[in-house]
Image (cartoon, rainbow, N blue to C red; front, side, top):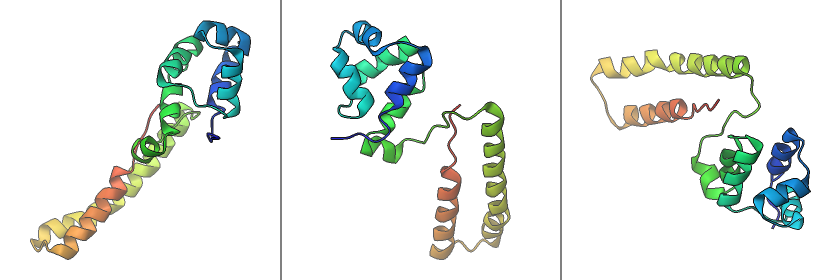
Length: 137
C-alpha cells in the first residue's frame, strides 16, 4: 500500500542532514525499512515515529503521521506546519473576521425568543463554521 504524503519522514530526516544509514542505526531498524518509510511503501509504527521526532527534533512529525490515518485524519485538526508565525496570525485573523460576520444573525435569533427547528438548524450550521477553526503552531 502506498501512503500519500509519506515523504514527511524524508523531509524530517533531510532537515537534520542525517543519512538513511545513520537514522536506521539510531532507530535500530534496517536501511531498507527507512527507505520503505520514505518511499511510501511502508508506514512506520507509532513508536518508531516517536523516536524519529526526538532524533530529528521535529515535534510536528507525529501529528503529520497521525493525519495519514484515514480515521484520525478525519477528526484531527489540520496543523499549520510550515507557516510562519505572521502567516498563521493573518490566517487566524481572517478566520476570526468570518466568525464575527455570524454574530449579528446569532444575536438576532437569540433576541427574537423564537427558537424553532429552523433557527436550530441555522445555529448548528453557524457553529460548524466556527468549530472548523483549528490552529497549531
